[in-house]
Image (cartoon, rainbow, N blue to C red; front, top):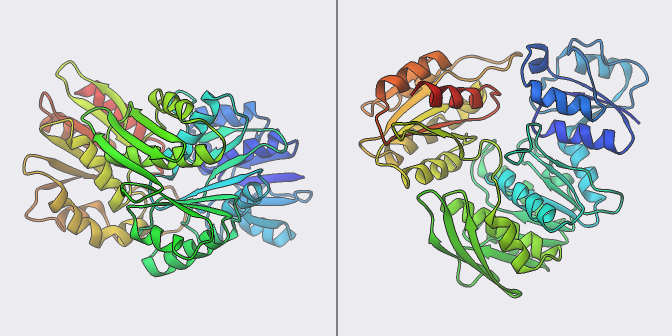
Amino acid sequence: MRYHFSGVGGAGMSPLARLMAARGHQVQGSDRGFDQGKAPEVQALLRAAGVALLPQDGGAVVDGLDRVVYSAAVEQDTPEMRAARSRGIALVPRPGLLAEVVNAGSPGVAISGTSGKSTVTGMIAWCLRHAGREATVLGGAALVGDGGGGCFAAGGAGAPVVAEACESDGTLVGYRPGIGLVHNITRDHDELEPLRRQFGTFAAQSALLLVNARCAEACALAAGHPRARRYGLDAQAELALEVIAPGPHQARGVLSTPAGEIAIELLQPGAHNLENAAAAAAVCLEMGLEPAAIAAALACFPGVARRFQLAGVTDDHIRVVDDYAHNADKIRAAVQAAQEGCDRLLCVFQPHGFGPARFLRPELRELWPRLLRPQDRLCYAGIYYAGGTVAKDISSQDLADDLFPLRAHHAPGHEEVLSWAADHAMPGDTVLVMGARDPDLPKLAQALFEVL
Protein backbone atom coordinates (compact mmCIF):
# COMPACT_ATOMS: atom_id res chain seq x y z
CA MET A 1 0.00 0.00 0.00
CA ARG A 2 0.98 3.63 -0.42
CA TYR A 3 0.73 5.77 2.72
CA HIS A 4 0.96 9.49 3.40
CA PHE A 5 1.46 10.57 7.04
CA SER A 6 0.26 14.11 7.73
CA GLY A 7 2.10 15.35 10.82
CA VAL A 8 4.71 12.61 10.48
CA GLY A 9 7.10 14.29 12.93
CA GLY A 10 4.82 13.65 15.91
CA ALA A 11 6.06 11.30 18.61
CA GLY A 12 3.24 8.86 17.88
CA MET A 13 3.32 9.26 14.10
CA SER A 14 7.01 8.77 13.41
CA PRO A 15 7.20 5.19 14.77
CA LEU A 16 4.11 4.16 12.79
CA ALA A 17 5.51 5.59 9.57
CA ARG A 18 8.78 3.76 10.13
CA LEU A 19 6.91 0.53 10.88
CA MET A 20 4.85 0.74 7.68
CA ALA A 21 8.06 1.30 5.71
CA ALA A 22 9.72 -1.66 7.47
CA ARG A 23 6.75 -3.82 6.47
CA GLY A 24 7.33 -3.04 2.80
CA HIS A 25 4.79 -0.28 2.18
CA GLN A 26 5.57 2.87 0.21
CA VAL A 27 5.55 5.66 2.78
CA GLN A 28 5.78 9.43 2.52
CA GLY A 29 4.99 12.15 5.03
CA SER A 30 4.90 15.84 5.83
CA ASP A 31 5.07 18.01 8.92
CA ARG A 32 4.80 21.78 9.32
CA GLY A 33 7.54 21.60 11.95
CA PHE A 34 9.85 20.08 9.34
CA ASP A 35 8.93 22.90 6.96
CA GLN A 36 10.18 25.29 9.66
CA GLY A 37 13.47 23.41 9.96
CA LYS A 38 12.60 21.78 13.28
CA ALA A 39 13.45 18.27 14.57
CA PRO A 40 16.32 17.43 12.17
CA GLU A 41 17.08 14.27 14.18
CA VAL A 42 13.58 12.91 13.59
CA GLN A 43 13.80 13.84 9.92
CA ALA A 44 17.03 11.86 9.63
CA LEU A 45 15.49 8.80 11.30
CA LEU A 46 12.52 8.86 8.94
CA ARG A 47 14.64 9.26 5.83
CA ALA A 48 16.92 6.43 6.98
CA ALA A 49 13.83 4.23 7.28
CA GLY A 50 12.86 5.00 3.69
CA VAL A 51 10.15 7.57 4.41
CA ALA A 52 10.03 10.37 1.80
CA LEU A 53 9.52 13.81 3.40
CA LEU A 54 7.56 16.42 1.46
CA PRO A 55 6.28 19.96 2.16
CA GLN A 56 2.96 20.18 4.00
CA ASP A 57 1.27 22.39 1.44
CA GLY A 58 -1.23 19.94 -0.02
CA GLY A 59 0.88 19.00 -3.02
CA ALA A 60 1.97 15.68 -1.53
CA VAL A 61 -1.58 14.28 -1.48
CA VAL A 62 -2.05 12.94 -4.99
CA ASP A 63 -3.94 10.21 -6.80
CA GLY A 64 -2.44 6.79 -6.18
CA LEU A 65 -2.27 7.11 -2.40
CA ASP A 66 -4.22 4.41 -0.60
CA ARG A 67 -4.42 6.02 2.84
CA VAL A 68 -3.70 9.37 4.48
CA VAL A 69 -2.87 8.86 8.15
CA TYR A 70 -3.25 12.04 10.19
CA SER A 71 -2.19 13.24 13.61
CA ALA A 72 -4.61 14.73 16.12
CA ALA A 73 -2.54 17.91 15.84
CA VAL A 74 -3.56 18.29 12.17
CA GLU A 75 -6.71 20.35 11.66
CA GLN A 76 -9.45 19.09 9.36
CA ASP A 77 -9.22 22.12 7.06
CA THR A 78 -5.52 21.89 6.13
CA PRO A 79 -4.70 21.69 2.39
CA GLU A 80 -3.69 18.04 2.82
CA MET A 81 -6.92 17.03 4.52
CA ARG A 82 -9.00 18.89 1.91
CA ALA A 83 -7.01 17.26 -0.91
CA ALA A 84 -7.53 13.77 0.55
CA ARG A 85 -11.28 14.28 0.83
CA SER A 86 -11.59 15.74 -2.65
CA ARG A 87 -9.71 12.78 -4.16
CA GLY A 88 -11.61 10.18 -2.14
CA ILE A 89 -8.49 8.90 -0.39
CA ALA A 90 -9.16 7.01 2.84
CA LEU A 91 -8.46 9.17 5.90
CA VAL A 92 -7.20 7.19 8.90
CA PRO A 93 -6.54 8.75 12.33
CA ARG A 94 -3.19 7.72 13.78
CA PRO A 95 -4.77 5.72 16.65
CA GLY A 96 -6.96 3.87 14.13
CA LEU A 97 -3.91 2.53 12.30
CA LEU A 98 -2.18 1.81 15.60
CA ALA A 99 -5.18 -0.23 16.78
CA GLU A 100 -5.01 -2.27 13.57
CA VAL A 101 -1.37 -3.09 14.30
CA VAL A 102 -2.05 -3.98 17.95
CA ASN A 103 -5.09 -6.11 17.18
CA ALA A 104 -3.01 -8.19 14.77
CA GLY A 105 -0.22 -8.77 17.32
CA SER A 106 0.57 -12.11 18.87
CA PRO A 107 -0.16 -11.02 21.50
CA GLY A 108 -1.17 -7.42 21.04
CA VAL A 109 -0.43 -5.37 24.16
CA ALA A 110 -2.06 -1.95 24.61
CA ILE A 111 -0.82 0.37 27.38
CA SER A 112 -3.47 2.93 28.33
CA GLY A 113 -4.06 5.53 31.03
CA THR A 114 -4.03 9.29 31.30
CA SER A 115 -0.50 9.36 32.76
CA GLY A 116 2.59 7.17 32.57
CA LYS A 117 1.92 5.41 29.25
CA SER A 118 5.15 6.41 27.55
CA THR A 119 7.34 5.39 30.48
CA VAL A 120 5.55 2.05 30.97
CA THR A 121 5.85 1.31 27.24
CA GLY A 122 9.52 2.30 27.29
CA MET A 123 10.19 0.06 30.30
CA ILE A 124 8.56 -2.90 28.56
CA ALA A 125 10.56 -2.20 25.40
CA TRP A 126 13.77 -2.06 27.42
CA CYS A 127 13.01 -5.31 29.29
CA LEU A 128 12.24 -7.13 26.03
CA ARG A 129 15.41 -5.78 24.41
CA HIS A 130 17.49 -6.66 27.48
CA ALA A 131 16.10 -10.22 27.40
CA GLY A 132 16.70 -10.60 23.66
CA ARG A 133 12.99 -10.95 22.89
CA GLU A 134 11.78 -9.86 19.46
CA ALA A 135 8.77 -7.54 19.44
CA THR A 136 7.24 -4.59 17.64
CA VAL A 137 7.10 -1.60 19.99
CA LEU A 138 5.38 1.71 19.29
CA GLY A 139 5.55 4.35 22.00
CA GLY A 140 5.34 8.12 22.22
CA ALA A 141 8.75 8.79 23.77
CA ALA A 142 12.12 7.41 22.70
CA LEU A 143 14.37 5.62 25.14
CA VAL A 144 17.16 7.91 26.30
CA GLY A 145 20.11 7.24 24.00
CA ASP A 146 17.95 6.08 21.05
CA GLY A 147 17.48 9.51 19.50
CA GLY A 148 14.12 11.10 18.70
CA GLY A 149 11.07 9.86 16.91
CA GLY A 150 9.35 7.92 19.68
CA CYS A 151 9.97 4.46 21.10
CA PHE A 152 10.31 2.04 18.20
CA ALA A 153 11.20 -1.53 17.35
CA ALA A 154 10.04 -3.40 14.26
CA GLY A 155 9.51 -7.07 15.06
CA GLY A 156 8.90 -9.65 12.40
CA ALA A 157 5.62 -11.23 11.36
CA GLY A 158 4.01 -13.05 14.27
CA ALA A 159 6.00 -11.15 16.91
CA PRO A 160 4.26 -9.52 19.88
CA VAL A 161 3.16 -5.91 19.47
CA VAL A 162 3.38 -3.48 22.40
CA ALA A 163 1.91 -0.03 21.89
CA GLU A 164 0.93 3.08 23.78
CA ALA A 165 -2.83 3.52 23.39
CA CYS A 166 -4.01 7.11 23.88
CA GLU A 167 -7.47 8.23 24.96
CA SER A 168 -7.07 11.82 23.72
CA ASP A 169 -9.33 11.53 20.67
CA GLY A 170 -11.77 8.81 21.74
CA THR A 171 -10.14 5.99 19.79
CA LEU A 172 -9.45 3.57 22.67
CA VAL A 173 -12.66 1.81 21.64
CA GLY A 174 -10.90 0.45 18.54
CA TYR A 175 -8.44 -1.73 20.48
CA ARG A 176 -8.99 -5.44 21.07
CA PRO A 177 -5.70 -6.39 22.72
CA GLY A 178 -4.65 -9.73 24.09
CA ILE A 179 -3.29 -7.77 27.07
CA GLY A 180 -4.84 -4.43 27.95
CA LEU A 181 -3.43 -2.27 30.73
CA VAL A 182 -5.19 0.68 32.39
CA HIS A 183 -2.66 2.60 34.48
CA ASN A 184 -4.95 5.41 35.66
CA ILE A 185 -7.97 7.48 34.67
CA THR A 186 -8.03 11.17 35.55
CA ARG A 187 -9.41 14.32 33.96
CA ASP A 188 -7.21 14.92 30.92
CA HIS A 189 -8.25 15.75 27.33
CA ASP A 190 -11.84 15.14 28.45
CA GLU A 191 -14.12 15.04 31.47
CA LEU A 192 -14.32 11.89 33.59
CA GLU A 193 -17.68 10.59 32.40
CA PRO A 194 -16.78 10.23 28.70
CA LEU A 195 -13.39 8.87 29.74
CA ARG A 196 -15.12 6.20 31.84
CA ARG A 197 -17.16 5.08 28.83
CA GLN A 198 -14.11 4.94 26.59
CA PHE A 199 -11.93 3.05 29.06
CA GLY A 200 -14.85 0.75 29.86
CA THR A 201 -15.10 -0.34 26.24
CA PHE A 202 -11.33 -0.78 26.05
CA ALA A 203 -11.34 -2.92 29.20
CA ALA A 204 -14.23 -5.09 28.01
CA GLN A 205 -12.43 -5.73 24.71
CA SER A 206 -9.15 -6.76 26.43
CA ALA A 207 -8.71 -10.53 26.71
CA LEU A 208 -6.57 -10.01 29.84
CA LEU A 209 -6.94 -6.78 31.81
CA LEU A 210 -4.23 -5.34 34.08
CA VAL A 211 -5.19 -2.39 36.29
CA ASN A 212 -3.40 -0.12 38.75
CA ALA A 213 -4.67 -1.03 42.23
CA ARG A 214 -4.21 2.55 43.49
CA CYS A 215 -6.61 4.01 40.92
CA ALA A 216 -10.25 3.53 41.91
CA GLU A 217 -11.44 4.31 38.38
CA ALA A 218 -9.19 1.63 36.89
CA CYS A 219 -10.11 -0.93 39.55
CA ALA A 220 -13.80 -0.40 38.84
CA LEU A 221 -13.18 -1.72 35.32
CA ALA A 222 -11.73 -4.93 36.72
CA ALA A 223 -14.76 -5.73 38.87
CA GLY A 224 -16.79 -7.42 36.15
CA HIS A 225 -13.96 -8.58 33.91
CA PRO A 226 -13.46 -12.36 33.57
CA ARG A 227 -9.64 -12.08 33.51
CA ALA A 228 -8.38 -9.09 35.47
CA ARG A 229 -5.32 -8.61 37.66
CA ARG A 230 -4.28 -5.69 39.83
CA TYR A 231 -0.78 -4.36 40.40
CA GLY A 232 0.64 -1.56 42.50
CA LEU A 233 0.30 0.07 45.90
CA ASP A 234 -2.26 -2.24 47.52
CA ALA A 235 -1.28 -5.16 49.74
CA GLN A 236 -4.27 -7.11 48.40
CA ALA A 237 -3.25 -6.72 44.74
CA GLU A 238 -2.17 -9.82 42.85
CA LEU A 239 1.10 -7.96 42.17
CA ALA A 240 1.62 -5.81 45.27
CA LEU A 241 4.16 -2.99 45.25
CA GLU A 242 6.05 -1.76 48.31
CA VAL A 243 7.88 1.55 48.05
CA ILE A 244 11.19 1.44 49.91
CA ALA A 245 12.58 4.81 48.83
CA PRO A 246 11.13 7.18 46.19
CA GLY A 247 14.26 9.32 45.98
CA PRO A 248 15.96 11.66 46.17
CA HIS A 249 17.69 10.70 42.92
CA GLN A 250 16.78 7.02 42.47
CA ALA A 251 13.79 4.90 43.47
CA ARG A 252 13.64 1.48 45.12
CA GLY A 253 10.79 -0.90 45.78
CA VAL A 254 9.70 -4.54 45.82
CA LEU A 255 6.97 -6.11 43.72
CA SER A 256 5.47 -9.33 45.07
CA THR A 257 4.16 -11.57 42.30
CA PRO A 258 2.97 -15.18 41.97
CA ALA A 259 6.26 -15.89 40.18
CA GLY A 260 8.37 -14.45 43.03
CA GLU A 261 9.56 -11.09 44.26
CA ILE A 262 11.02 -8.51 41.89
CA ALA A 263 13.45 -6.06 43.47
CA ILE A 264 12.92 -2.78 41.60
CA GLU A 265 15.88 -0.40 41.57
CA LEU A 266 15.47 2.50 39.17
CA LEU A 267 17.90 5.18 38.07
CA GLN A 268 14.95 7.61 38.09
CA PRO A 269 13.28 9.03 41.22
CA GLY A 270 9.62 9.12 42.19
CA ALA A 271 6.96 6.80 43.58
CA HIS A 272 5.13 7.21 40.28
CA ASN A 273 8.09 5.63 38.49
CA LEU A 274 7.91 2.64 40.82
CA GLU A 275 4.25 2.31 39.84
CA ASN A 276 5.29 2.55 36.19
CA ALA A 277 7.81 -0.23 36.78
CA ALA A 278 5.16 -2.39 38.47
CA ALA A 279 2.93 -1.99 35.40
CA ALA A 280 5.79 -2.88 33.04
CA ALA A 281 6.72 -5.90 35.16
CA ALA A 282 3.10 -7.11 35.13
CA VAL A 283 3.08 -7.07 31.33
CA CYS A 284 6.53 -8.64 31.01
CA LEU A 285 5.54 -11.52 33.29
CA GLU A 286 2.53 -12.20 31.07
CA MET A 287 4.88 -12.20 28.08
CA GLY A 288 7.01 -14.90 29.66
CA LEU A 289 9.96 -12.98 31.13
CA GLU A 290 11.42 -14.25 34.39
CA PRO A 291 11.41 -12.04 37.51
CA ALA A 292 15.21 -11.95 37.63
CA ALA A 293 15.40 -10.79 34.00
CA ILE A 294 12.87 -8.03 34.65
CA ALA A 295 14.75 -6.82 37.74
CA ALA A 296 18.08 -6.81 35.90
CA ALA A 297 16.64 -4.81 33.00
CA LEU A 298 14.88 -2.23 35.18
CA ALA A 299 18.07 -1.66 37.17
CA CYS A 300 19.73 -0.23 34.05
CA PHE A 301 16.66 1.31 32.42
CA PRO A 302 17.92 4.60 30.91
CA GLY A 303 14.56 6.38 31.04
CA VAL A 304 12.54 7.83 28.22
CA ALA A 305 13.02 11.21 26.61
CA ARG A 306 11.70 14.19 28.56
CA ARG A 307 10.41 12.10 31.47
CA PHE A 308 12.39 13.61 34.33
CA GLN A 309 15.44 13.68 32.07
CA LEU A 310 18.49 15.32 33.59
CA ALA A 311 19.87 18.08 31.38
CA GLY A 312 22.84 18.57 33.69
CA VAL A 313 24.17 19.77 37.03
CA THR A 314 26.10 23.06 37.10
CA ASP A 315 29.29 23.80 39.02
CA ASP A 316 27.05 25.51 41.61
CA HIS A 317 25.09 22.25 41.99
CA ILE A 318 22.02 23.61 40.22
CA ARG A 319 20.19 20.64 38.73
CA VAL A 320 18.21 21.16 35.49
CA VAL A 321 15.53 18.58 34.67
CA ASP A 322 13.37 18.32 31.54
CA ASP A 323 9.90 16.71 31.81
CA TYR A 324 6.89 16.22 29.53
CA ALA A 325 4.39 16.93 32.33
CA HIS A 326 1.38 18.77 30.96
CA ASN A 327 -1.67 17.83 33.03
CA ALA A 328 -2.35 18.10 36.75
CA ASP A 329 -1.36 14.54 37.69
CA LYS A 330 1.82 14.62 35.62
CA ILE A 331 2.80 18.01 37.02
CA ARG A 332 2.19 16.78 40.57
CA ALA A 333 4.33 13.65 40.04
CA ALA A 334 7.22 15.57 38.43
CA VAL A 335 7.23 18.35 41.03
CA GLN A 336 7.09 15.95 43.98
CA ALA A 337 9.93 13.88 42.53
CA ALA A 338 11.99 17.05 42.07
CA GLN A 339 11.23 18.30 45.58
CA GLU A 340 12.61 15.05 47.01
CA GLY A 341 16.04 16.09 45.80
CA CYS A 342 16.26 19.80 46.57
CA ASP A 343 15.56 22.43 49.20
CA ARG A 344 14.20 24.86 46.61
CA LEU A 345 12.55 24.26 43.26
CA LEU A 346 12.16 26.60 40.30
CA CYS A 347 9.32 25.39 38.05
CA VAL A 348 9.00 26.45 34.42
CA PHE A 349 5.70 25.33 32.89
CA GLN A 350 4.69 25.91 29.27
CA PRO A 351 1.05 25.04 28.41
CA HIS A 352 0.96 22.93 25.25
CA GLY A 353 -1.83 24.76 23.45
CA PHE A 354 -4.60 27.31 23.87
CA GLY A 355 -7.33 24.67 24.14
CA PRO A 356 -5.45 22.67 26.78
CA ALA A 357 -4.72 25.89 28.70
CA ARG A 358 -8.43 26.68 28.85
CA PHE A 359 -9.28 23.10 29.87
CA LEU A 360 -6.64 22.94 32.59
CA ARG A 361 -7.06 26.46 33.97
CA PRO A 362 -9.33 25.58 36.95
CA GLU A 363 -7.11 22.67 38.01
CA LEU A 364 -3.90 24.67 37.70
CA ARG A 365 -5.39 27.45 39.81
CA GLU A 366 -5.96 24.96 42.64
CA LEU A 367 -2.90 22.77 42.09
CA TRP A 368 0.03 25.16 42.39
CA PRO A 369 -0.73 26.65 45.85
CA ARG A 370 -1.09 23.13 47.31
CA LEU A 371 1.95 21.74 45.53
CA LEU A 372 4.63 24.40 45.86
CA ARG A 373 6.51 24.97 49.09
CA PRO A 374 6.90 28.57 50.35
CA GLN A 375 10.45 28.74 49.03
CA ASP A 376 9.64 27.31 45.57
CA ARG A 377 9.11 29.53 42.53
CA LEU A 378 6.96 29.24 39.38
CA CYS A 379 7.35 30.74 35.91
CA TYR A 380 4.70 30.30 33.20
CA ALA A 381 6.19 30.33 29.72
CA GLY A 382 4.10 31.57 26.80
CA ILE A 383 1.53 29.07 25.49
CA TYR A 384 2.94 26.87 22.73
CA TYR A 385 1.49 27.55 19.29
CA ALA A 386 2.25 25.08 16.51
CA GLY A 387 0.33 26.95 13.82
CA GLY A 388 -3.12 26.45 12.38
CA THR A 389 -6.47 27.98 13.28
CA VAL A 390 -7.00 28.24 17.03
CA ALA A 391 -8.64 30.80 19.28
CA LYS A 392 -5.90 32.65 21.16
CA ASP A 393 -8.26 33.87 23.87
CA ILE A 394 -6.12 32.93 26.87
CA SER A 395 -2.50 33.61 27.81
CA SER A 396 0.08 32.41 30.28
CA GLN A 397 -0.20 35.83 31.88
CA ASP A 398 -3.84 35.02 32.64
CA LEU A 399 -2.78 31.73 34.25
CA ALA A 400 -0.13 33.49 36.33
CA ASP A 401 -2.63 36.16 37.42
CA ASP A 402 -4.97 33.38 38.62
CA LEU A 403 -2.46 32.53 41.35
CA PHE A 404 -2.33 35.91 43.13
CA PRO A 405 -1.15 36.33 45.88
CA LEU A 406 1.16 33.39 45.04
CA ARG A 407 4.09 34.92 43.20
CA ALA A 408 3.98 33.42 39.71
CA HIS A 409 6.07 34.96 36.94
CA HIS A 410 5.15 35.14 33.26
CA ALA A 411 7.82 34.86 30.56
CA PRO A 412 6.45 35.31 27.02
CA GLY A 413 9.33 33.49 25.30
CA HIS A 414 12.23 31.17 26.03
CA GLU A 415 14.72 34.03 26.18
CA GLU A 416 12.69 35.59 28.99
CA VAL A 417 12.61 32.20 30.76
CA LEU A 418 16.40 32.12 30.65
CA SER A 419 16.59 35.62 32.11
CA TRP A 420 14.13 34.76 34.90
CA ALA A 421 16.05 31.62 35.85
CA ALA A 422 19.39 33.43 35.79
CA ASP A 423 17.97 36.06 38.14
CA HIS A 424 16.43 33.61 40.61
CA ALA A 425 18.45 30.37 40.64
CA MET A 426 20.76 29.81 43.59
CA PRO A 427 23.32 27.09 44.34
CA GLY A 428 21.62 23.81 45.20
CA ASP A 429 18.34 24.62 43.44
CA THR A 430 16.58 22.35 40.96
CA VAL A 431 15.11 23.93 37.83
CA LEU A 432 12.29 21.82 36.40
CA VAL A 433 11.13 22.50 32.82
CA MET A 434 7.68 21.08 32.02
CA GLY A 435 5.49 21.04 28.93
CA ALA A 436 4.46 19.01 25.91
CA ARG A 437 4.53 19.20 22.09
CA ASP A 438 7.12 21.97 21.73
CA PRO A 439 10.24 20.39 20.19
CA ASP A 440 12.32 23.31 21.49
CA LEU A 441 11.74 22.55 25.18
CA PRO A 442 14.75 20.19 25.41
CA LYS A 443 16.84 22.98 23.91
CA LEU A 444 15.49 25.33 26.57
CA ALA A 445 16.50 22.89 29.31
CA GLN A 446 19.97 22.59 27.82
CA ALA A 447 20.26 26.38 27.51
CA LEU A 448 19.27 26.74 31.17
CA PHE A 449 22.00 24.33 32.17
CA GLU A 450 24.53 26.31 30.14
CA VAL A 451 23.49 29.76 31.40
CA LEU A 452 23.18 28.97 35.12
